[in-house]
Length: 165
Image (cartoon, rainbow, N blue to C red; front, side, top):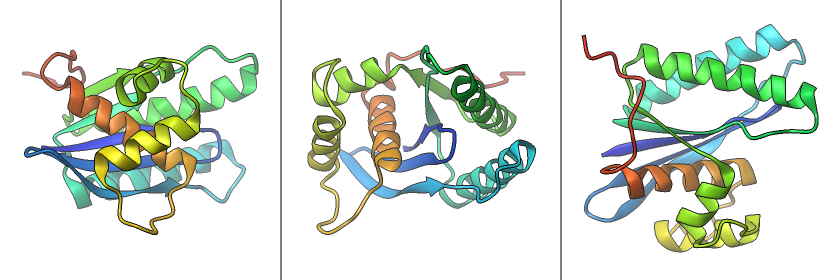
């Protein structure tokens, strides 16, 4: 099973792709980073790149980080807009969606809900046996952690976003 993890952000969207069974296998990761400050053009860029990513990897499921409370309303709105685009594309392509909060990701991947980024990154690196020398941005590491959460919870997490009709 191929799982796509997506970490929405205001300036970068991290993605990570893994395969499951047997075990976990790293496939791809990176960031989608629009070069414009125009909000509508940024969302269109994200949409196009995400569709290309889905075409290339054909994920059976996707995992998106849940929006958490933010003191900065402008930042929260920008992240919510990016999440909306991602959820719309995934639902439109009938890809089942799982969502996890940052603390849920930390607990599932690193074993503790208050782990720092370094602890999560180390757990991702060890679990996926990332290639030596692979340089991964934090956003992509977070996306790989999300994909792992989806793999851990595939049998028990509630999948949404699939039109059964």
